[in-house]
Image 1 (tube, rainbow, N blue to C red):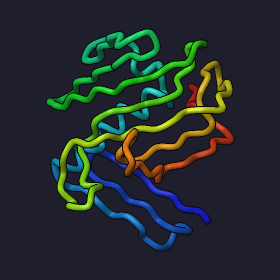
Image 2 (cartoon, helix red, strand yellow):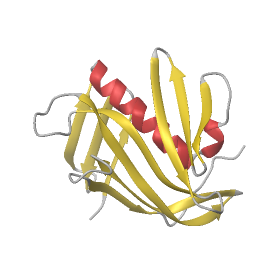
Image 3 (tube, rainbow, N blue to C red):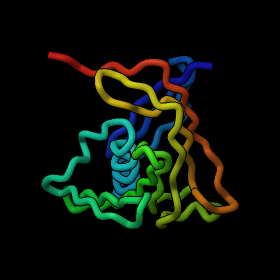
Length: 158
C-alpha cells in the first residue's frame, strides 16, 4: 500500500494512493511546536551534519553512551537524547515531544523516541536503514507507529 505526503511547521498532509487524504493537520502553535520536536529528532539520524555544534546547537554528554543535543530556533527549543553503541553508532533517540497523542487528546510533553538499526553508507554518510518510532517511548504504552525500511537515499548535488 502506497502513501505519500509532506510535513512542515505549518501543516501535515498525507494521501493514500495519491488520491485519498488520510491526514490534514496544522495551522496552530501546537502543531508548530510538535513539528519542531520531530524535525530536531529526525535531523539527528537522517542528516547528522545538520546538528554539528554551531549557532543555536549545543551538545552535552549525559554518560558514557548518551549525549543530548539542544537546538534553539525562533523562540523554540528542543532537546533530544541520543544513545550510541560501543562503535559510536547511534542506536536510540528519545525526547519529550509536544503532542496530543494521548487518551485525553490534550497537548502536553510526553515521551517520544525510537530505535535505529541496519546502517549503510550513502554518499559518505552512515545512516540507519531500519527506523521505528512512536509516542510514549520507554513506557508500557509505547507503540511504534512509524516503521521504515530505507532502500535508497539520494542527496541533492550541484
